[in-house]
Length: 258
Image (tube, rainbow, N blue to C red; front, side, top):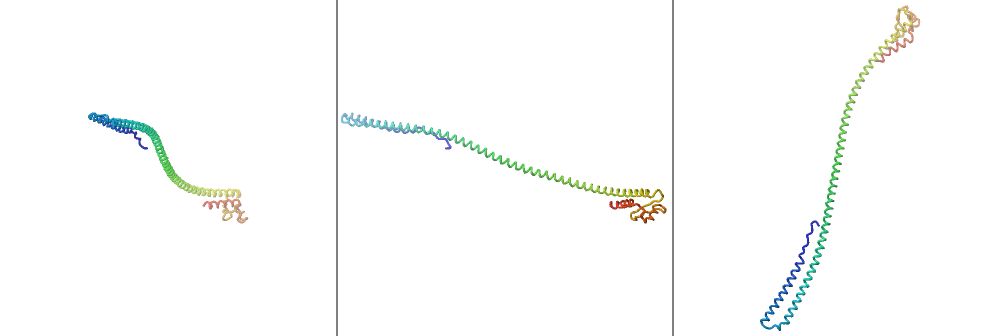
């Protein structure tokens, strides 16, 4: 029941009552008029005795009509009371139905609000989930971009470090070669100095100078020196073994440096 119930009208009993009362009154008046007309007619004729029976019949008919009208009026009143009670019952049922309708409409309104809130919450959660996914994708993309930049910087740094290390390696190799050359020349001078010292130690303080070469395996000197004389007796074995070993080491050092 979507709309309000229309109140019932209470005019029905009166509508029933009035025609019945009017009909009874009309009959009574008609009978009375007929009776009066008959009395007047009899008076004119001067004889009322013969019509007594007719008058009595007319009076009885009037009484019966009155009684019938009274009965009909009572029935109409009873019907009116019954209809009035039914109207009160219908009005009570109408009020009850209106109350039930109001409660149903309130429950429907609350349910609609709950559904709207639930739908809005579901939409909000869906939007938040999509936003979170987009933020996660953006974060991953940003991290990938930053990682790419960091790797590019590290690659550049490694390349520069590689070039620097290659340059340092070249410099170190050049210095190493220079040091080896210096060491080889220093060792040669040291060997020569050692040989001179050994020759002076074993050969004495004479004016003869001896120079031993590992290729010849012999010592050369001036004639008349003790070393020369020993060399002639020993058959080229005038240089001590230690001097020959030092000379051989000195001669191998420059060859290894190159």
